[in-house]
Length: 482
Image (cartoon, rainbow, N blue to C red; front, side):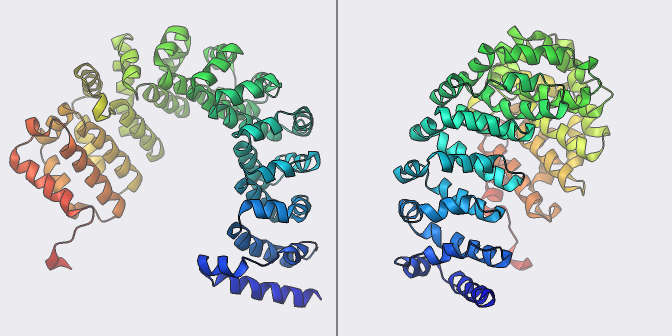
């Protein structure tokens, strides 16, 4: 009876859960799981969930080829189970089997329809598992062939047409596969699966447009993805939208996604952004003056995203000098006057503006960073110093992050040494009581000490103190204080 089955399953779950991985592997090696799968054929939720827990423990112990061949029928049956937990368990097992011949053999039209139904499930957790599986599947040659076969394409388009949410899930899978390889993008494009994407971006439904923007943005990070967007006139379409966003009554909702999209282009291809889409850069520069703090902060973040790389810094530096001077003034206002949430974001963006990895530091680029930092005003370093001493963890961490980026530059090291009390503060372990604070301060010292300009900037005694600090580690308590 059900009570006895529940009890037996519970006891089995407890017993299996008490075993370590090697004991579990030895214990289930020769055990047939058919009778466990049979326990899923019930409307008793408690029984089904306990069965799921047991299968989640034992299935990963067996090689995926064995699971997929020996338990193909119960796995497929479970994929159509009404309980979301069962669907998720099967999709997780399928995900483990990607790359195995047995999985491709299993994926007949019935199974593929069930997987599409999971992608279009109202439960977000089921949809997410389906996205993960289909993405991983499509990143293999055999899996890509399965996804691009006519039957699957027709069913995918038909089922996802029921809802914009389902369409976005489909596009997320397609984009993730396309980012992975030019071959994947080419095959998906040729079978027509991207057909409705532009319509989605033109939609009057703001939420749908925002979701589509977020999904396609990773394509910008690859040359073949960028070329696809250009070839399909998507970048021009979005450039027109951002140039006229102030005409949209829902501008504050639409603008952030557009700005981030072009920020990614600026980070990967700054010269192309400046040369081909000057109207976009113009709107982003205007955005820093918006009375809507969301628009102004996103604009600062977008500029900082472009400025993250040396080519991005060079491209922005070639703009009208007055424009970047004005932008840096807005940064200073944002990090000192706005509420905490916005200040933290502005500080993170400022860190991007200043950032340069050691192997990219050249005299020309470091002069750009210095010029921009100086445009923050004479009290900029003092303001950051004060923020590292505030009791608010988010502000403190963001300020230390900026300080670490400053410390990578020789001009920053000189400013730190010459600023009253700052170098001593960095070496004073007593000011930080949290692990995060100790780590942040340690990272600044590490950046200073590992700089190639350390010997020309610091005195020997200062270098010795930093070396000792690093040798003692992030957390150090003098022996007498134990």
